[in-house]
Image (cartoon, rainbow, N blue to C red):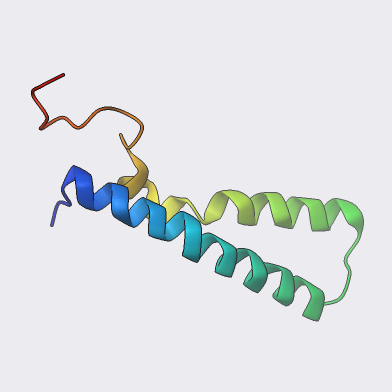
Length: 74
C-alpha cells in the first residue's frame, strides 16, 4: 500500500515529533539499566541506535523535502 505525498508528510511529522522522543527516552532508559559500559562501547551503541531508528521509516521520509509530485502548479 503506497502512501500519498501528504500522508507521508503527516506521518513523518508524527514520527519525528512523537516517535523519536519516545525512542530516545527508551534507548537511554535501557542503557542506564544495563549499567555503564566503557565509553567507546557506549558511543558505538548510541551511534548505532541513532541510525537504526530511521531504517524502518525510510519509505516515509523519502522525497519529503521535495515539492509534491502531484502538484502541477509549480
